[in-house]
Image 1 (cartoon, helix red, strand yellow):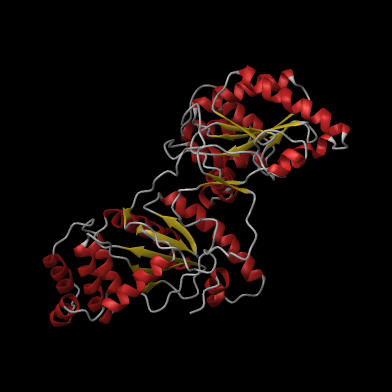
Image 2 (cartoon, helix red, strand yellow; image 1 turned 180 degrees about the horizontal axis):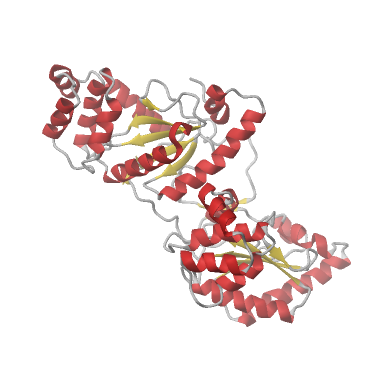
Length: 467
């Protein structure tokens, strides 16, 4: 959380072990097609500065702008207002509260001329912000969003009990709210906002877009007023050219950038894309026709992978046969025990004990010795001769190396790396991050079922994977 935001901000890191520079992806959905025209909505920032689209300037629309769809986000004020203010907000951020009250005063000053739009950007450092955002969408569904937000920003701070009290005060059905939180009914809406923020490199709150013009932080009223007056002058000029107020926002932002990319930024996996990750003969736990497939590229010596394993177990307990888990070996350089454990796991798999071995090794939290591998194998009834052969020869190295090559082709450069129906989550993320993505994927699964796709073919259909 901060009062300002610069274009030079870099991507936030994630918890995970790193391999090194990623290999350029050869996955069909991840690779750029040189035959396709460049997406002009993606701005490439080379020196910390960014200029407006030339066509925008030629059309008489000044200033750097970004294209953000209003969509079904909570909005108040006339739909044909000449000024649209989009606010990316965190309900636990005191800067957001301060800035919101500034905008409220401006709404009074410019009565009928401002449409205010809310976008959720709950920050990871705020424990209750995500829950508050999800309940906010429950309030929106009941037509009570702005009353709910007024209470959230009433100065008392938030925690789960306060969020529930505010929900009750605005007239929400608390049983329904609890049900929607449990099912993550509104997670897709929040994730849509988060993806927009990620593409624009927004890592702090609040951030405003005034007819597409970025204004980060809780700024003094006169800064807002200056920009609003400029936009009202633009609206008058465009009206003379035949652009009605109702069309102004779409017109002024049609050239706006929808993503920022830094010229020296390393290529990375894009959670908005679906990657075709083959399952092959990798270890599998769960039904072949499960609607959700989670493929993990993992390293037995990586403490973040051990942490991720705990999260996977929580998902398995919650979703049961709705998830199929797949393991890919990705022992990192500098982790010699990881490679040894991967070798040993093939002896376990040979007697149908891969997952028992997998679970037992991760119990060590990434800290184990060769004799620990032997002890686990003995407890699981793995023949000692088979274990020693697996650990001391290169018999299974080609299969490990095949997983490493596959991960490299997908730009996996650290562990753990998960692909949920082909969509990546990199690092040891909180359980809620996985649950929100799974909720979105279950929607995609339902759409596939409505198209007549058989349960066993869902994964191939959704990812384009050809085994």
